[in-house]
Image (cartoon, rainbow, N blue to C red):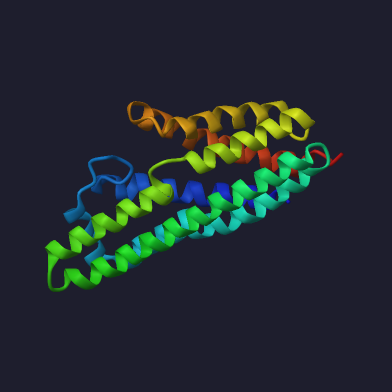
Length: 213
């Protein structure tokens, strides 16, 4: 059951690589995103952004569902009530990520359609749908932070995961919650993003190597 954690990690790495190499010049990953530049890019290569959205959101969400179930199975013996709550929160997060991905892909498709006749409308439509995407899961990490943090608390109480995994999870969860604070949003987002990568690695190895009690 370590494979879901590693799958989430692979999608995260691939999405990050595409972000840094191709999409960063358009302003992705920052507050200075240029809607006209994005729609121009969509006109040239809509399939690229659809692929990127599908990797970082849709495939990620599907792998996350399996990971949520696997971690609930690990936590259930020692902390049955908390494990049920973590499962519910994890599935909510997966649904939000999935919704963000579907919204992002619709934004690309509709922007490509309107850009053929009305660039201004295409840009405004993309910007609105992009804001919805960010609200669902791309612009804050509250749902993910709560889930990872609560999984770590349950593991701490029951000794279900290793100390390093628990520590990383608590730090990552705190980073996700702090994205709610505008003044700390960018820094907290970095803490959550890098912490989540490390936590998925640690969680995957725990599921793979540590026998269940």
